[in-house]
Length: 252
Image 1 (cartoon, rainbow, N blue to C red):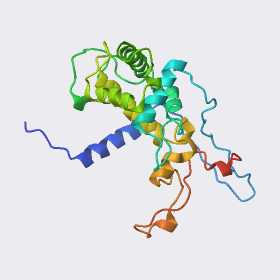
Image 2: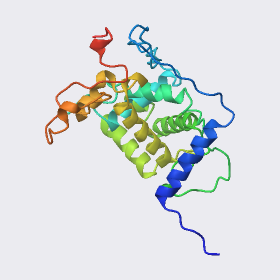
Image 3: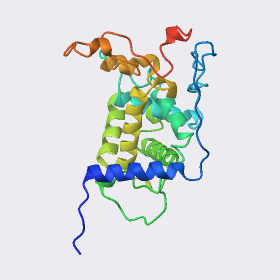
Image 4: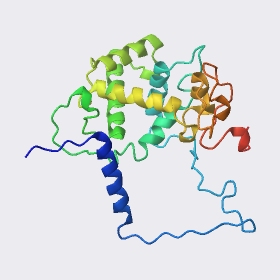
């Protein structure tokens, strides 16, 4: 029997229908009510569940030596220059630290079982190490390499051009990190650095929305009605984060 072809649109429609049906099985019925002018307004400002910002600007995963390495390495990836502040000023290391201390660092929700055959670059992350374990092992291996070939100076104390050479060797996979693949670590470090530079400030990076200001990104504004027809014009309004702007929250 010739198989019946299903278009992508049909597949998506069927999937959505199945998901909707699954959501109604065994659940309690939903109720609604009318809200009249004399009733108490159920959607007053600040009554919804507010996002939880980073409470403590301190390291939870990195020890002091590891933190110094990450601050130095990310600063070489995104250095302070005439375009804007670097990774250190934007809190990128703090962002990475808190991610590694949480679900991301533990690879929660990832498939982390075997088989352990070497994967292709197109297959994404293939290490058996969780992100937190990868960072810890890679930093130690890099510092051991630095100590054996660049006297007793740690990575953070090296000259910028020497740091760049180490990072370049990581990117090209030339550095032997023992049980850690150098290119895999570089890819994760580079990805996390970009995330820390441009994610919402609520997660600890992109301090003062500096990354967004550098790009001209408006952030989480609720509408752009005044700008729909203004093609090719630079958007001149300040960016807005998930929590709003500092002046809205009494922070500036």
